[in-house]
Length: 164
Figure 1 (cartoon, rainbow, N blue to C red):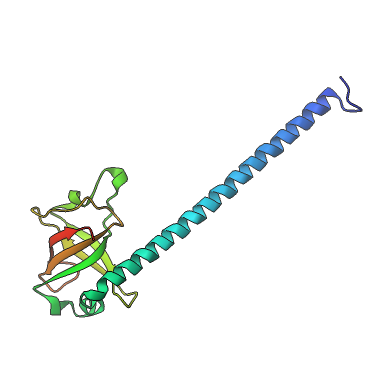
Figure 2 (cartoon, rainbow, N blue to C red):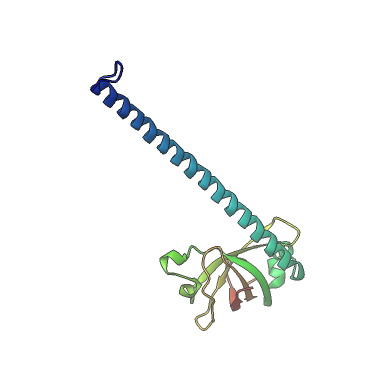
């Protein structure tokens, strides 16, 4: 079969070329779409983190001065404190784990003061008899604890943990 100077092999070659271009174009579109989705997810994550930071700052407005607590921790020795914090311990729902799996151990948390970007990093012991919510990494909880040693890394024992 002839089409005005195009042979069967020429037509087949043209179709293969066009098919390859189409596949390459589909691949490029998929890469652009994936890149766009990744960028969008990063923006959402950053926005979510910024929003969470703002929420914690707002909740801490009625609490004690976090910057003072960081700078003068010994002043709080023996005192009971309640603060909203975010779970920083690497425990993930996808692994079927939660804060409940950390009972009897120390757990890392962080928070922010109301009018500052100063970050509080604190380690708190979860006693074996403590009722703990099914929270995971990145979840916000409100912790009531006793600062037994006047230290951010040791001697802090949880008395209650609830979701805000």
